[in-house]
Length: 202
Length: 202
DNA sequence: TTAAAAAATGAATATTGATTCAATTTATGT
DNA sequence: ACATAAATTGAATCAATATTCATTTTTTAA
Image 1 (cartoon, rainbow over the protein chains, first blue to last red):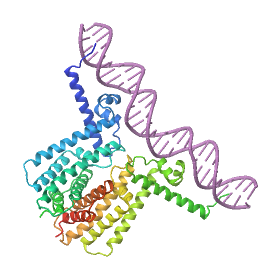
Image 2 (image 1 turned 180 degrees about the horizontal axis):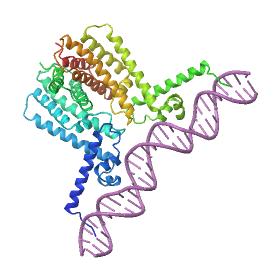
Image 3 (image 1 turned 90 degrees about the vertical axis):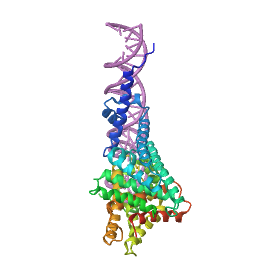
Image 4 (image 1 turned 60 degrees about the horizontal axis):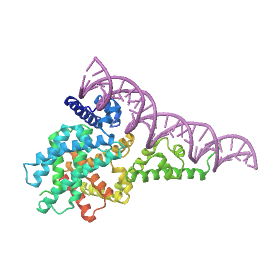
């Protein structure tokens, strides 16, 4: 005899999976990140340690799904914010604004997507740097277009895209890890101007 | 009866301590950093695991000494390169050149001083980010001076110093972790220009 | 309401890596 | 060369976590 899950059970299980993912986000975003153990995550999600393994193959699988989810959330916002613009500079600025808004609004997301020094977890590191490289790649596409149109001077766009993302990341992380700047407007403007000027916008 | 170390023994012990420090550098700079275990470090240094603890109180002490050493090496080069200049822009440019030369010349040093995702080691992370913050602090001093002299526009110098260091770090790491750029001159120039223009140099 | 199936539990096990320590080797001073 | 101190060794111990699994609880379908 084979039993079938009822709708109610399916929902409960989905909700549990979500609870685990949220617990993982919360804990990974916390100050030291140090105790992102399965035990701690399970506890936060309100389940027993062993139950975790009914929902995810192992810790790696959890991290994989979680990173993909939050990365997608970010990309969706970026896409939406860029949509109205055709000019390369406007698109770049929209991207930065989308990132600033998203990251400052959901700091846990910034902490996880941008912060260095995660676990000893090699897997995490690989996936993490894939994401940063992705962001750099997207930026480079914009820059190549701008250079093509001679709106920015001749340059190694791989380098400037990397610098662009690096500057951005370091500043956001600074804001996340310390206190936000007193004069938010000046601070945001400084960051955006730094990157735009850095490219050599005329 | 108390015995006293001969000169020969003192030298041998100093050389051993150095060997341990060098082994640690080598291993920490390696691709995955994953096996920077005491066992591996000791083996590389040509001693038994337990011997390590005759030279360092624990792993943290080793990392502390090692980081201090390589950070000092970097600062010494920077100081020397800046010495000839009084103009703020020249000093900044000299700093960047010193860093590029040092990091590209001794990649292990760059890997350790700039690379993210070290160990699960909380201690390492703290010391590591202290160094980055230090570099940002020094940069900010230069920028405040430049703004004071109205050589760069009004800006949040904490933010631009952070962006400056962040851009720099990401690019150097990119070069370290992937291949160096084809056109080295263009690449270097792009990085330096990005940062100088970013500040709003007239 | 009940028996079989599925899910959940958490204590036990496995793994990895730091640290210790009894035993051994080497150095010192006579 | 000898007796004692100091240094070295590496296997054993400890600690922290991921993962498993025998047992218990909940769900399903008659």
